[in-house]
Length: 81
Image 1 (cartoon, rainbow, N blue to C red):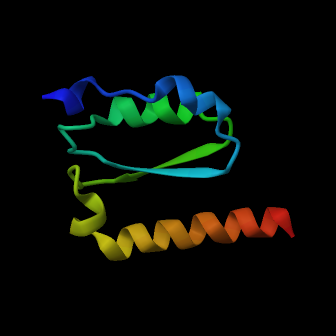
Image 2 (image 1 turned 135 degrees about the horizontal axis):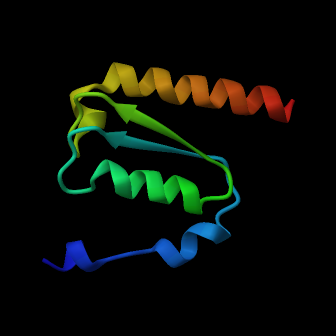
């Protein structure tokens, strides 16, 4: 029950590291709107939505998520170079 009350929203603006937020389109524990709000609060973030993913999208679709992470890192490393 307490998990539903936890929030670190006040810390998000202080995070300066490029961030990839991975969200499941069918996540009922952390709805997509929460992930969208998180991306808006972070200074440098992108959102990747697992189309049929739930809260466990990383486990349900590991290959899709791995590709998204690789592409994110490729873009970010190219910018840093």
